[in-house]
Length: 199
View 1 (spheres, rainbow, N blue to C red):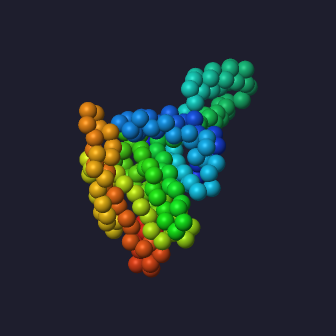
View 2: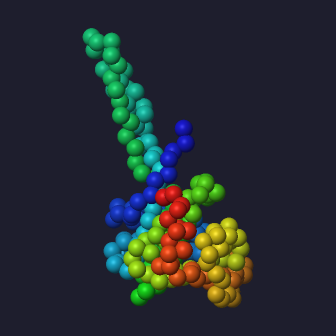
View 3: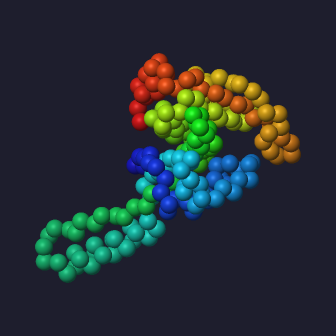
């Protein structure tokens, strides 16, 4: 059975896991974000996407307890076992408020869970948060090779404003950054575009 993706605000306990998956998601960037500090900043907002992951060895332990119970029980009813789960973070988005603008700093999903709409949902959470916080525009940038990300931004009417030459490291050379800007996100037409999408 496929685990359901869930979205929520970051909590302090997420910092260690975010630091771990950052290096897997952004392998070429050599990022070492201090998420303990990022989470505390009032100017920052982080959303995470999680799935439920069964705790290691929990199935074997529960089966053992169940068998012991059934061995000594005089009833025919088997013991109901609730298998414990942990949240596993598979993606996140991080934004930065600067005056009346919102900068989307990172949107990333672990490779195994890409092409399932998770990145788009994280992006929409950022846009909705920007609208609700009173920001007027959203700024972001991505690698020139990240065609899927650029198509997503264009889908939501973001326009290319500039190109930063040789901005990102890429293997033995460097890659351009494509800078995007949203329309005025407080306009009614834009809110209708965003809020007709499911969370």
